[in-house]
Image (cartoon, rainbow, N blue to C red; front, side, top):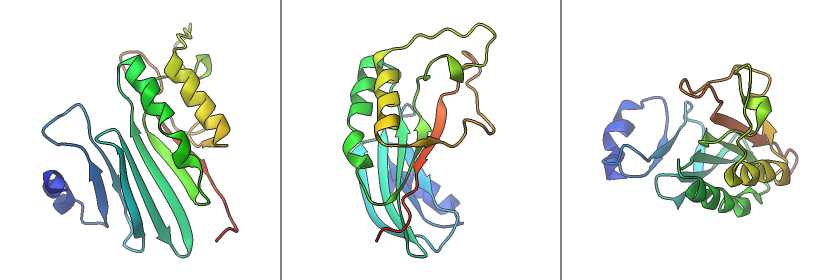
Length: 165
């Protein structure tokens, strides 16, 4: 994508894939590969600047990487998450991550008195994780917190499917 040429030039460690318009600072997603042995097989912009899907292969192992940047508006975010379900149906190893712009209830808040403001998008995301049999890779590790609300908004989920061709 021409809009991201300057970013592609700066990333010298491998391939990069981008979606969105870098004239709009409120959207845009990318996937950076820090290894030149990845073979990118398919790139799909699911929602421009919001959801980018990359099918890649490395050493015979096939991956589907889905990078998500959730809307701040609850209704738009809910609709965005609802579009993801079909893309989790794959025999590839799934890695889905990004800034979902919502929390998944009390257990992901770090303040002393967590408030569960469950909205529709949180429910849709939680069902997506359950239905997709995804694992939260950062649940027990290092977390990144959004400062203003002290909520964990960036997450990475995966489903590893081994032994399939």
